[in-house]
Image (cartoon, rainbow, N blue to C red; front, side, top):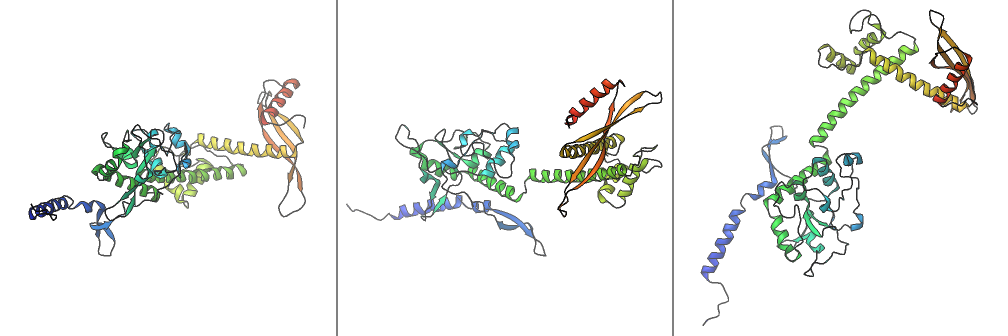
Length: 408
């Protein structure tokens, strides 16, 4: 009997046939990492030519201490209010077991921005078979001896299981391994990880994760585009309202009436306010665009009516009043000038309050104080009675409302 050490010809042919069959199965799989772009005549790229995109790059360090994992940590670029709005303010970004099985867009973006964490400096507990998770699984050894970091592998300290970061966030199939419940089969963990990372579902989820991460960094997500549109609209209205406030200040300083007998644009006798708005539209593109929308009936919100005018007047009056009170409190001592305004029947209706105080100012270029005596109108106070006792009580109440002490 001969002891043959070399395989026979039939065995060699069978082995080669199996290798050819395996290679045939993998044919075309490389094109999943490519996207087609067309190159125009001027050299610019569009859809049609082949462009290799990095889908397996990672900026995640393979060694992260468990002490760095915190509860409710804020991701960069996300306000904590956005977390509390969805009721997940207590989510632990380093423990995937605390994440919901189905993540919404806000939580998914938070987790992608924060990225997966590899816990290594931790006393991993042993199971009933005296086995436990090892940080060795964070790396995958290729056939050529090279080691590749499994940046998608995350460990849960609360459940003592491992999850796939991308499948946990993007998988829509409940039976995907390392998705909902994770895995704690430490005896077969090497085989489980090897099978999972070669699955089509994992590869698709990994590409989706990397694409979303790249879009978040470059600011090219759909939400970002909507936010940019909202910011542009917000800036438009800010510029428009600033024009109206400046216009109201000019009319108030010049003691001019806001409204006339007509309240329509481009009509005679419609008042100084609307006339100045028409004048600004000749030179200001924002005001011109706003009036164009009004004329073409593209918007019903114009902020040019009498109610808005009255509101602007009240806001300006409130700001001026606060400034006067700040100056009076800085001067500390003040005097009050009171006067009553009778109506046509000679009945006192309004109590006029004027504060007299020393305005203390210190100019930056002058070393000494520049003091001057000022009299500032504080407002009208309605009166129900004209007796001295009632007027005194009204005065004391008004001073308390504005925060001034009668002792001063």
